[in-house]
Amino acid sequence: MSGPGVGWYLIVAAALFGIGALGVMLRRSPLVVLLSLEIMLNAGNLTLIAFARQQGNLDGQIFALAVMAVAAAEVAIGLGLIVAMARRGLALDVDQASALKG
Amino acid sequence: MGNFLVWVVWFVAAGSCLGSGIAVVSLNNPFYSALSLIGNLASLAVLYLLLAAQFLAAAQVLVYAGAVMVMFLFVIAYLGGRADAPWAGGSPLIQSAAVVAAVALLVEIVVVLGLAWGDNLKDPAEVSDSFGSPAAIGQLFLTDHLLAFEITSIVLLVAAIGGVVLGTTRERGNGIEERV
Image (tube, rainbow over all chains, first blue to last red; front, side, top):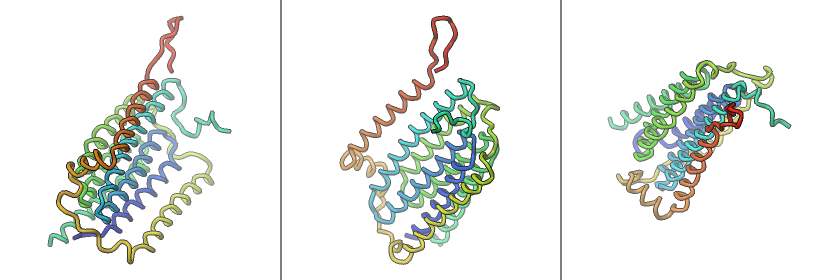
């Protein structure tokens, strides 16, 4: 393969995963938490596709497509929950949505 | 020469990928966060192309940067100013713990990568031009991975029904609209 080897892609994926994890743990707006979650899922996808290329096996790309479908489902449900929270007049702040806390 | 060009494309795509990722996490306005995520997804599609995943790159732009992000922007516009939460939460202790945990995750992955760098990551396999083409992916989906394909459709159906259930408003007998 000409150009950068698979390891370089994996490093980008690792950095992206770290950025996404930081966003999920640090931010309070549920919207931004969902966006950061998308970054983490995409970092995983990049890893799957990089290894699919490394092994010359398309199974990794199939897995990445399945992850995309799950991400789309997750966004639909997550945004539905956020809209439901907003309509009930709850604060859009994950620190205050603690009613299920033990 | 072609080799050099691939490096340049990789460098630009990876740089904009990481830059827009940091922008998503750090920007205060969720609208701008969502816009930078679109840039992030587009530059990821370029990386997918470099990895011979043509179909996935197209699907990434169509499904993610197109459909999913339009839904995101629609909800952010619907919520308006209510979407603005304080930037970060918790005590300074919890915040620094979050940073430490994220950095620890990153270091862990990079160390594992560094250990594997020498032998396992060398010499990627030779692939034909049809690697990652829609035909090859479709063939696999309808033969080896038929079950995964069907389960994916069920997951999407459940999500669609869930979205409808979460989004409907119910009319009560006394005329007051109850938000479900």
